[in-house]
Length: 84
Image 1 (cartoon, helix red, strand yellow):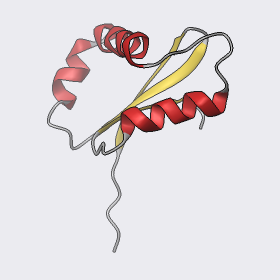
Image 2: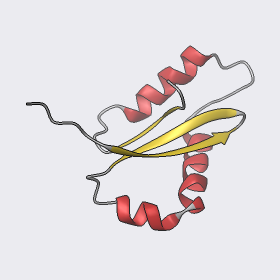
Image 3: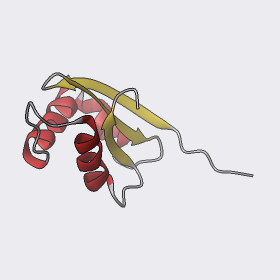
């Protein structure tokens, strides 16, 4: 028997790039995130601006690498490219 983790998805576009924030349905933070509404998306956009060095020349592979770095060790919350 395998355990399957279910996620709530919060898609958004920032800097012309489609992202999705995935939050485990088991996360203790999910109720607060759900109540935040658009403020949660704004928080994600701020984190992108602060943590990722995105330029017009950033390749998809470079962006995936940056996201892998910030997601490393994560268990309940992940920031990913939407559709990948």
